[in-house]
Length: 103
Length: 324
Image 1: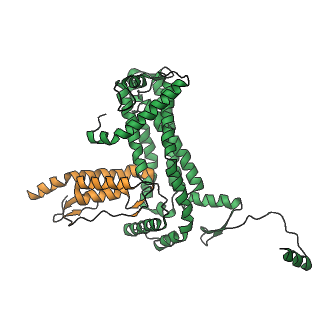
Image 2: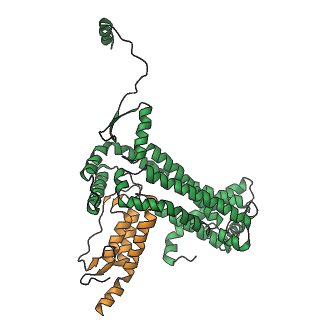
Image 3: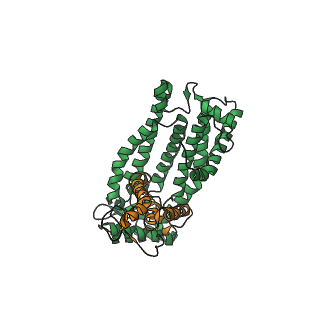
């Protein structure tokens, strides 16, 4: 029961993960490398959503894109680490409960 | 097409500017004596709008050129990083390499990348124009200067008197409007062509060997051939007015990309080698080739004269030496 609730809780961010994976595979290559930061804006947003969920992750991502303007110095800019990692990330990028292997 | 509330709030200022540019150009062409209700007037307004937007982005472009010039100074450090990760193709080494490269760019202030925000800003412009046209078709006023009357005029405007700007290929098949279909097909071909050339230029000529070896590159190559097809098909559902925006924008990008690749290529890419060879032919560069045939480094040198040096006797040589 708890596992199902957790799975439902993780659905929004996993949908976002699916969308971002699609973007990174199909749309992103069109532009080539443009981002002035490492990790790139889309990768940063992906990580942020994985760690913080859809709402906070999107806010962090949008803030990052706003900072990625032509006058920015760029450089390394990692996602601010979450206090305690609760979940595990699969190879594809889906977020699952850390104790169980299913996703 | 309905846009969710919060996105349209973000889009509002962009939509406003789009309408401002569109209406200004429209009244400019009107005062120049063109028929305000004519489709061509509206098409030229769209073209003018694109040119203004892209010209406004030129400072961004110039900044990129400047940091590219500076890149030459950090080239040795960049090469050091590249050598360190030579032949390491696993994900962790690649990530560590990009991390170090980015760090170097930041430290030296030579970031050659163009940043993400301008790209994302283009999307709302496209979106805005799309919704302006869509609304205009229904006779709805825009958010700013495009009032109901102008919107209706825009919506009703016909190119060459036969092809309505709000009509897409798809709709044209329904009504049997051959002119729209012909224009749409020509534009889709031009659009797809220019997009393809731009991408091909970036991918085949302006990427460093490291980037070419990455698994991402293979994926990109496949997409290079698939995406134009996708564009071609999606292009059939866009109204003609939006396609004119897209085409003008594509042509501008193609020209700009050509200049960038020709004059400020990514260091280590094929385009960079071509540029070095070109410069060497003009006698401005001396290329030292490494043992494997790749260009190792480039030495700046004074231009060589083709004129034969007259041999001089010992005494004269001495005298000449004294003169200098």
